[in-house]
Length: 421
Image (tube, rainbow, N blue to C red):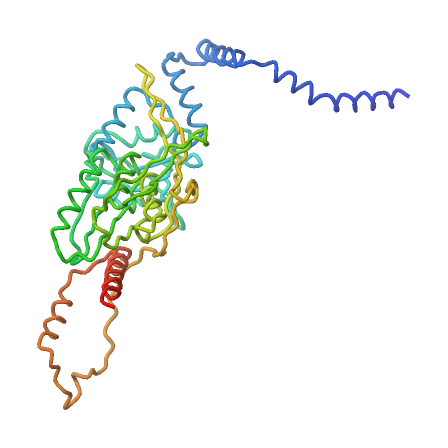
């Protein structure tokens, strides 16, 4: 009888225990949690093995809260905030890489063109596991970035993990990182515009570059290169998209209240007057780059060529908390004009082209018509001159760019034939 009673009592206890726990949870108020936080901080101050300043405890606590939410949120103290302002203006000291934190390691989003990291061969997707032989595990993103910065001319040994390779060390000499966000050149009959980052001057620089290229009256189209562009300012991404669009939505951002999105739209006016446009992307194209690629793709204004982009579809807002610094916090997700989120997915190119080496194949031995005895002469006097001219063209070692240029010329030729017919 006692055994049956014990079993019955245990059954009743197991039946009602979830409700007891739920009732206890409901009794814990917001004030109780704040009190718990305050008491924990006090305990750390009084009982930790070493003395810790209030500033360090509070900053670490806030940074811990933010960094636990997602890889892009963190606390910026006054110094880090000032460094970030300098970076967005286009000049700062360090290695020249855009990074995030993944599985405890520092992951390279992309190296910045012509910086020490770029010249040392650091690639998008690399993992930095050690700095000067010391593991980065346990460091916050800001702490790791601070360790990578240092006096100009000083050296840093970086241990790199790369897919399908053994970890290896690279010694990089720090330098002042001057970011030229826009570079351009004429590739024979195609305008090439390279955007390395979206900083305060990007729209202005891009507009000036395109106007300069437009002076060539025989342009067949443009290539917009966003490869290894880690992103930057949202408003600059909107402005660059607007350069090529006549109308319609560019991007929308949706915060916690997703029923009330902020929508950015294009104003009338296409700076290249409808000429063919090809956009180059790769795994290092992130955030603001993906906004531009997504908008031009959805409006069918450009063909996207390359490989899948990084997949960062969130918006971070800098919220000042004077005089302590600022909260860098994810406040919204962004969506392309078709309503797609690229978070963790990225932009899929219309034409997938992996980067590859271009090698010239030896001409096969054999005769041509011109080698045959008694062959008729070519009546076109300029044929030999054209062949010579083509053989002297500048060689392009960038396979993806070469395919993009061919595509622009192909579209231009096709449109010309349609117009004639």
